[in-house]
Amino acid sequence: MHRFIAVLVGATLLVMLASYVLDAQQPDAEPFAAEGIPVVPLPDPPVEYGTAEGQRIRVSVVTDGLTYPWGFTFLPDGSVLVTERLGTLRVIRNGVLEPTPLSGVPEVYTGQALAGLMDVAVHPEFSDNRWVYLTYSKPTETGSTVALARGRLEGQVLSEVRDLFVSNGDGAAAGASRLLFAPDGTLFMTLGGAFGGRRPAAQDPASHVGKMLRLRDDGVAAEENPFVGQADAEPEVFSLGHRNQMGVAIHPDTGELWASEHAPQGGDEVNIIRPGQNYGWPVVSYSREYTGQRVTERPWREDFVQPEFVWIPSIGPSGLMFYTGDRFPAWRGDLFVGSLMTGRVERTGHLERIKFNQQGLEQRREWLLAGLRRRIRDVKQGPDGLIYVLTAGGFLGVDPAGGEAALLRIEPAD
Image (tube, rainbow, N blue to C red; front, side, top):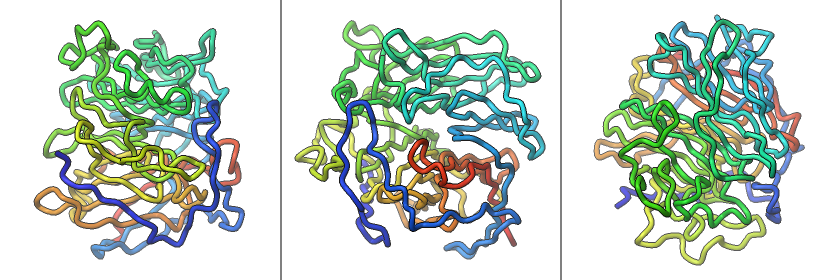
């Protein structure tokens, strides 16, 4: 049983401005470009904010100059790898974005608005083996699919690059993909794309579309996966019934896998992912179509797992992180969720902090960084215990003036 459902209903200054018709070739209807909501400058020099627990924070720019970034990860020496959706892998060293991208990145398909180079992760034993993992939209004869590649980082080059896993979701390149190494060394990989005519694939265990996958570090299905050995299922599938998962995190106390998921219009979710479980899409959903009608008559059914959180209106949840550091003691154990926008209105993204009580139930929420009016694409705790946020800039092809993409740092101001 789920522990709770937290539904945010329209107590917001924003309203849903329009209805949109879902195009089978375009997974998400275009957001309103918010001409009346001006872009504000990046926090350079740093800007201080007050927060709910009295903790004052300072937000500063680590680096800007990024182009539609998707994901980032830290290297042992404190450097940062950042993926850009148009197919480049960038390096930030000592707070400076190196002008030349790394070479060796596979050819990336970018023919749809949400396609491109997606997430990046490094092997748990990176200091010894130098392995870097990438998910990306791979060109195929009939379109594209999502693949997992691995290469060895040597200076400014990815060498020995090859695909470890190629999904069978041809045409699903516009689906999101995130990567997360679990404490046992296995690799979780999300694969979205369950839009339009591909919605039924989310319920088909023989399709990788709309799934959480669990792999070994060599890209082979983990032996303990729930569908291993079943003729009508793919062995990589760990859970099913997802639409488009944008964030993954491991709970620091329970070891549970949590994931954020986009719905069409409202009904965004955070789920606790368990092996073999079905999360309902598109049979049940709290969301509405872009034309306004409900996606399903009922939002739940007893044979599907209910979400831990549901957002109405949508916040466009992206990166996910549990804070475990010492720099923000009052925030230890809190869940941080990136938001791309609120209510389908551009320039309304924020970082949402969710606090739990001693029973592990939601206690309260707080919006952070809303004044920056940026799309928050990813959030991570740095090796220094500070919080780092990746902003995405404008919506690709819709709001190109939505502000510079940057890596931001949040630190205590006291």
